[in-house]
Length: 203
Image (cartoon, rainbow, N blue to C red; front, side, top):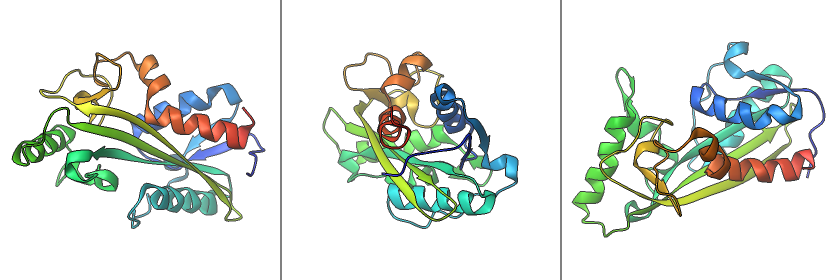
């Protein structure tokens, strides 16, 4: 396992919600954290069919382009009754001609569950894969999951993406309702980050 050394890190994402969550998780390490957007980098096309492949693609692209270690996140929602969909296409399900519409995407998920007459509880999980890549082409990959179930109607205006329809195991509030600080401790990104810290930061 390669340890992180240095004081600068690029977050290979343009997603404001992810940048905020990951930035907060990195705060204790005293790093100068910069986004890919600061370097004027476009996001590479995500051509892989799994979270690990897309995370590697994004992190390695940013590391090569900036000459700095880069951290990427590829994450999504896996719904058991939909055979794991939307999975790596989680963001694609929200795409419209005018940008991403996650309310539409949540309706799409629920409509598919209704059409399939899926039994309750409609179990699902958020998955996060983090990849820390260096400019020399090496990388380390870490996966985290947060199991739960989907609820309807949507609840809450906090969070982002599919959060208002996701209820984590042992919780009474959706990710759209829950206090952001609590969500940051229990979600899939936190799980993957704990593995990253243990593996690469010696925490």
